Amino acid sequence: MGHTRVVTLTLNPALDMTVRADGWQQNTVNSGQDMHLNAGGKGVNVASFLADWGVNVTATGLLGRENASAFDTLFRAKHIEDAFIRVPGSTRVGVKIVDHARQQTTDINLPGLTATPELLQALEAKLAELSANHDVFVLAGSLPPGIESDYYAKLVAQLRQAGKFVALDTSGPALNAALAADTLPNLVKPNNHELSAALGKELNSETDLLDAAHNLLKRGVELVVISQGEEGALLVTPGDIVKARPPRVQVVSTVGAGDAMVAGLVAAHLDRLSLAAAARRATSFSVGNITRLGAHLPPRAELDDIAARVDVSAIRPADPLKV
Ligand SMILES: Nc1ncnc2c1ncn2[C@@H]1O[C@H](COP(=O)(O)OP(=O)(O)OP(=O)(O)O)[C@@H](O)[C@H]1O
Ligand SMILES: [Mg+2]
Image 1: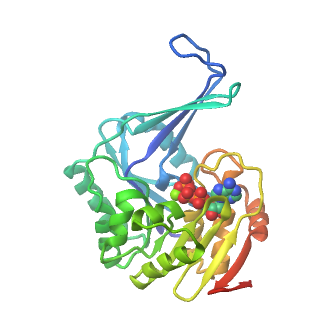
Image 2: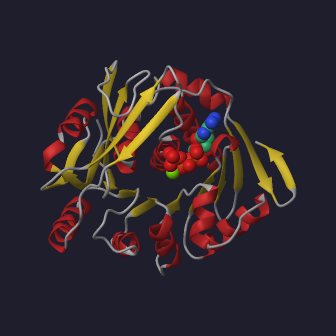
Image 3: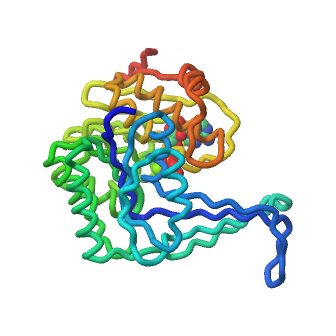
């Protein structure tokens, strides 16, 4: 293994519990068939994909002490360096009750941790410590209660000031604040809906999306990736635009498709890939992930096969070129 270089930050991780109970009824006693616990949250997922790819990765953030064992198991299994701040209480739990017989899913989302000034101070000390031997920081997911919506904007400014490469994947007010700040991340990967909401304008055409991307590039972002679900993604740098369309695959679960794309983009950055090659790699991570359950990549040979089948085309204003 090489030198540890990438940190993922997850301020609002989640423990997902999926219970299968076919034909279950309310207000009575039911039998279940199966229960599965999954340690997640966007930064945890990104760390999981990067670890599968062979990147040395450190995961930090806030983790509830009372239900951390699924996280401990994941970090141990994938050799992810655990730099989470342990917090009194429980990480938020999402309960999913799946009924295969009736093809229904019921979700119950429980509240999680609330950040305090003391916890944020501990977190910032941890980030400063990690800065000594990491140069890429991935800030991912929502902010828990107790954190102001401009918190990512503040961290981005600090990390970039320290010369770090910063990738941001969030949504809502946190994305809005981060995109309105003076110092922007090096890489952002909103989906088209998140970008539209953050900028407060409709982005209906490819031209609208590219205008929005170019505006962010002018203000200091180096790579804007706008994902569009099964449509694929637009990758935009000051000099190039590419569109990456995924091959058709048997979809098992699209959960984490965007997180896999972020991991693929970070892996591409570490290898200094061209934009077209980055588009292929990021899409192969996403598509590889959606063919299985959980935040895992398929074996390298399968990823290579998917990557070869990604349709990557260069876009010049009104002049698409195949690359
Ligand atoms: N149904 C699908 N079929 C094929 N590829 C898909 C599908 N959904 C997503 N992808 C791939 O995954 C990439 C990212 O997906 P998407 O735009 O849905 O991310 P997201 O909205 O950020 O997801 P997340 O819920 O993980 O945050 C897409 O660009 C595409 O390559
Ligand atoms: Mg996403």
